[in-house]
Image (cartoon, rainbow, N blue to C red; front, side, top):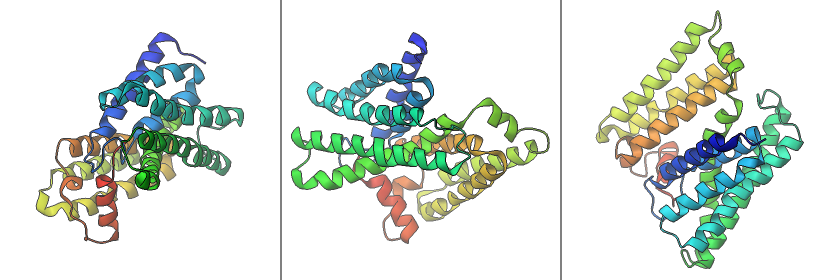
Length: 277
């Protein structure tokens, strides 16, 4: 189960970096991120390499909370939920013999249930409750804080967790094997180019840039149907990192898009402007 000291250090560093990225996003309230990829990393690490890496992940969760400026006791309480939720989900998924390729409906439903209805719910409820106990939010804010926390964790689970769970050498060979290589390269190149063009568009064209970001979704769905979930979800993760990094740096449509531009655009705006983890 345990991959040793190197695995512990790598897992802790990955979790801390993902947490830093999530907390660096634009937000109206501290400590609750609208996108928390650390949740996906924690679940993937614990499912693939076992519960022996939980202490390293807990140390990283504790460190990122300390970096955010919370008292040590509150950091420990929140970190316990941030890692305890995915740990419990990972133990159940491994006992239920989850197939990491997610090719069967059973496996996908198991992951969705254990992740978005298990790990993220426990983490969100624990985190929001301790923020209220610690006086960081009011009691009246508790339901909305828990919901925002759950949404950020769930988004992070899907974007970061699924590719880390499903990507393997077999999937890569399948995507770039004879007869599929050219199509896979074109779909990935088209997706990446669309993201780069959208991020480079001026602030006055924020809404067209958001519309352009729908193109990679369609291309990567096509890739998933033709080459499997692993390569497509890995591309989603890479593009999400690029988009979030650009947003943190003050570039891209999520920085400037005003509300009121239609349901999809408004939803995107409020997703990025909701309270951080």
